[in-house]
Amino acid sequence: MPASSKADVVTELVTLRDFLRYGVSQFNRAGLVYGHGTSDALDEAAFLILHTLSLPINTLEPWLEARLSLEERERVFDVLLKRVTTRLPAPYLVGEAWIGPYRFFIDERAIIPRSYIGELLCGDISLILDESNTVTRVLDLCTGSACLAILATFAFPHAKIDAVDLSSDALEVAKRNVAEYGLEDVVRLIKSDLFSQINGACYDLIIANPPYVTSRAVSEFPPEYACEPRMAHAGGADGFDLVRVILEKAAGFLSKNGKILVEVGQGKEQLEAEYPDLPFFWLDTENSQGEVFALSAHDLKRLT
Image 1 (tube, rainbow, N blue to C red):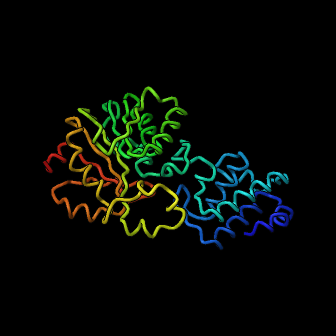
Image 2: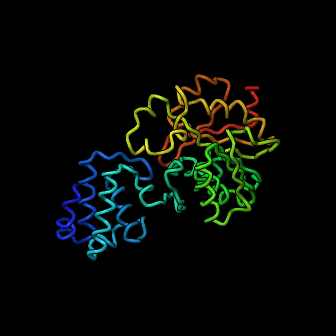
Image 3: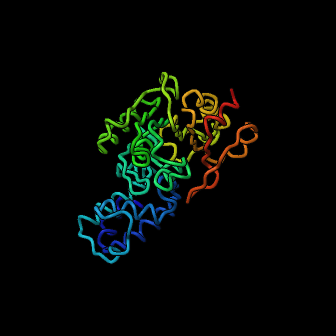
């Protein structure tokens, strides 16, 4: 996708459909990697094009035959070229990511919002707790951009949320998202290494999407994943350094009927083998099977 071809491309391609086809072809030729809100070249190109044209990102059909102005064609070409040359995922290029209907600001200071817990919080809360109005305090560990903390405010409207992260940079991104949703009085941002700065607090629900990628996998990341903060991925030799800390300490921060909800990727078999006495309850989502577990405070006390 050489820059010298820009004049020819913007002359020959006219409709949104033309640029969508062109973008998919260029992405496939470049061998791009996805997984930051889109799963393939078509979805990635569509997201970038629709965002660049200030169109709703959830539908292509009404616009496919729309003819683009020369200025629009140049802007679309530029963003498609940037995706290929920088290998930055689309959300970093446009400064926003989506979980369900919720938009979040994002830049390279924080991991791009995406979580199966987010799917659960946007869906049927009864899968997590029997009655959402019993939740008055929530702790979001490894909050990153604060996307899950913000989703928790909608899922549990009577709750106060503490959102924790060790990264000052990530907390700056989180601060902006909390402000954009007007939730400064509901979501409290705390710089902490997991529970280390949480003193005497007791929560009805702890949610966590901690780093759970093995050291080897992190070292072999494609550019799209390597551009995210390393600490947001790195879970140690087997991926579960932080997960173990959460399991071992969470009981001391849960109310009597409290629960934890943790995303661990493909770690189901390993965790069940390592903790045979814990009755992990595995939750499926539309896009995952057995990558998120729930445990109660009572369950966790088996480790003490």
